Length: 505
Figure 1: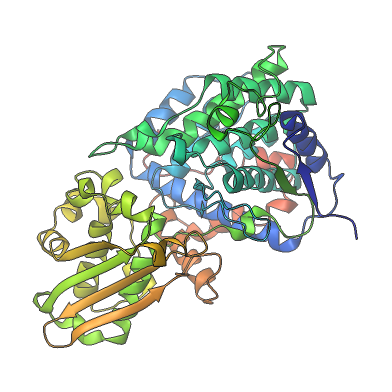
Figure 2 (figure 1 turned 90 degrees about the vertical axis):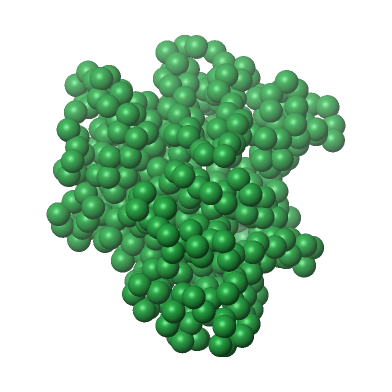
């Protein structure tokens, strides 16, 4: 049987191999892509646009600032791309900057954990479905149709997802958006007809000049840099491609370059090699996107197990919702790296939305407060939305009171070894009358790729509706506009994001 994957071996020039793979994949020379993979990427794209629309309509800072910046760089004729909610063609790197920032602002779109045990690739790097605007911009500039744009989205997710499985960035304090930026440069270059040598130069430029560290995610109260990191890196990826197309020659063979991040931090076994083989799916359905996870609201995905655990307890024991005063304590046991990220003591007093959505005490206390107010406890009823991170919610007296009753525990090796296969979490609630109530061990909460609960499609549609309605009058029409991308013409792809959004100039 013909192999359905391509292996870029560590002893070869993987930059050139990646470039050739992208060119062949987008040209359809590597075989048929399965329906399941294309449907998965379309669902993640739909989800990302709803996140973007609501972030812009709510006037969030970074997307607003970066969109205004982009509109100051008009392109000539139709050689550019559009920002969400505008018909003005701007320089493609600026459209990508603005649109990726809007997609990512809420930190509510898809996630991957860099885990493929069947291939033995378990580096466990994070990543997110932030980079679809790169594919749309590239298709717009190249006048490509929807089928090619959708394959480009799939390819971006495949490259960044597989890199996340073989090379951990966080271990070296490097930001996870680097993998997405590399994927963006390679795919964008292939869309625009760049040669293998030109894509290699773009990758060298990107990795040699534009490497973000995790300093952008450090601090007691996080800044705009945290949410805009993917956007800025994607901007540099697109800009690097255009420089290479104009003839600029960047460093060659960057994955084996001993002074670049991969060999510098990865310490390959032999001189002249990169630290990893990179295995990419070429056809069928075994694409990285099929193992990625959805968020069913605005929260750091590491908290999904705790959310599921709390909802399970409240649904089994509705009497808990009679009075908040009877909840004496909540104990949440989690794994590393979640314990270091969302249980960080610095997140005990979040004062910005960027800090609150990475604060496990805040997320759980807000859910519990909403459950008391609504006397209901389902994912749809308790879905965390932008309003749950506004000042009135951030400093709600009951939320702050409940936060003080939450104890966070590291579960040790028993929990750590179960990640990133799952999100191992146990929630225990001490009730004045009912005693201790436990969720049991949660591994695959709703939204997780290995969760088999059939509610997912319904909840994703509900999430889309609630977020999109913050910026458009008819969310259903927007849903229909974005679906069936594979059947869209080049003109429809170029205008895909031109729909009006409330509160935008």
